[in-house]
Length: 448
Ligand SMILES: Nc1ncnc2c1ncn2[C@@H]1O[C@H](COP(=O)(O)OP(=O)(O)O)[C@@H](O)[C@H]1O
Ligand SMILES: [Mg+2]
Image 1: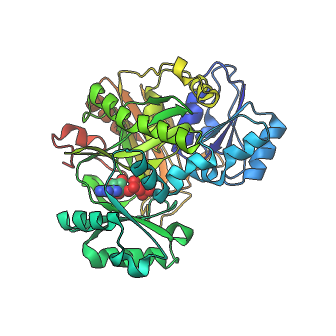
Image 2: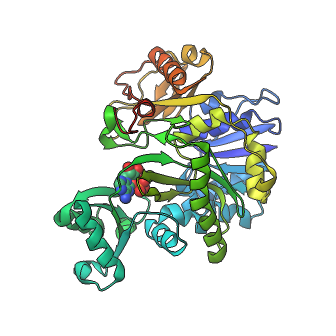
């Protein structure tokens, strides 16, 4: 089989690495890929994975490439091409592609769409009040029933989460205290300066307290197979301080849910989700990744993402024992009911090494040393995110640079192994969190 993978981050390196282990794959490309992806070799024949200089959003060029090379399967990593309709485009041309179609991608590209869907189909979520730009001038005087709800939940703690409707690179969510902050946040979103179309609608959600976990399920239009739990670390600094980032590290499994509890949650979320999709005519084939808050009143979905998490993928795929090509094929073909997902009992921890200054401004082109030594450690894999090749060196080329991932017999062992590998890697200005997975060892599940 010939496979084309789309994207260039740590998630895509993990996908390429795992797909390359499949006995079905004889040739693989990645567009645009990164320096780590270019070092991968196929288990079947030792062939190198070839990086192709086409960006993930250049849909016509990607289509032309897949047609020219006669790719048997294209695997899409990031959200943007999915929201732009890459899956629909490839299908119209008779090409096999894995990922959600444009209609299904709305779950991620529109928080408004997701919130309405969750309310309609009884998926447990935060209470919410949605406001459009037309309604904004008189938003506090609407007679809608959810306005009364909003007043009630705002009274509870005087807090509210204001979310811009569209894709906003993790910057469209503001936690506000009191009405004047809520008003300012909405004003900024509706002004259209920073958020464009993403800010034409906003969702005001009740502020929920609890432990946040990432769920993933692989779907094939009718069947949804839940993954084990993972937890992300979104903030830049230890103790969940500093700005939100794309993710500074992950671990799996988390101790916050037993297998029985996870199965119960999956049922509460996935069953109404799949039923709703059938009723709305949404053919959901791909990953469904709900962000979930475990509150004292039960699990509540905060948002849906429609692709693999980054860096969740790094911990999931190091634990996955199935052939990934077979799973993705089944997801496209609608035959997942015949598959059983198999997970290693080992724990996995991924520590992201970032450029100094990220998620703000940062320099690029810093030489990275120690990669080979770190990669050669047992049970350890260094996934590249923002890297490039410069002569015979590998240099930094993005905010998140590496995802150092290690397995261990338990979380403590995996954590120690990941940090041992991190110690070997150097580049100027490097920044990483020293507390990835620490929450697992704190009884409350909150920062230690
Ligand atoms: N209703 C809520 N209550 C408390 N915290 C929330 C709520 N909604 C979102 N958050 C916090 O904000 C973060 C980002 O919100 P999310 O809906 O996941 O949007 P995005 O990932 O698109 O930025 C979440 O990971 C969570 O920590
Ligand atoms: Mg999120």
